[in-house]
Length: 261
Ligand code: PLP
Image: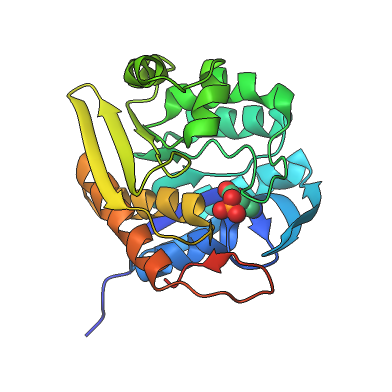
């Protein structure tokens, strides 16, 4: 008996030579969700669990040809964008997505790695705001990324209370504000959409995770590809990352844990 081919999801992101984050994390996540992953590599990082030592942006012509290759052949059910590196790449990816109109788009506005390296040029933030975010079904900023997108700190409870509305005003249909960079024994991930707010609370694991953001966004994309509604996709993806981090391991010499998919 022939089995049906799996659903297909696309990641447009950066490569992590250490196999913990970026494209590598995305493809492992898609596979763990039973989804066939295809990829467009927008930047190549030289990286291990200690940090990023070099970033090579992929030339625009080759990003375009990768996009042509995957969109021309595969029925792509959902797209996730991660590290894009610079403004020209953001503009190209946004232009192609406007043309290709995927059913679902998850935008992870990757800016700086946990280890402290810049993964998006500062002058590219405007392009992310004006070109990419308005196309997103779900935007997944952490607190520092949300601050950069809004242009002001999110320190007081008043600022935090207004953040959801302000982020939604950038044009995404839903925003998952990740609480991992906050303090306290509990992490609150907060999802905002036209229906209101949904809080997802979970205990803070006392370990430094590497690739958690990439994995979360690609797990959301995989769930959307499989037919989950956005809120359900977000809840399941948060649980997936929690489980994968709890079962994580340290493949390198630093304290960083890589997720077990
Ligand atoms: N490398 C690449 C290519 C990424 O896309 C990201 C995050 O999105 C990172 C590294 C950083 O991962 P982390 O901050 O979890 O270490």
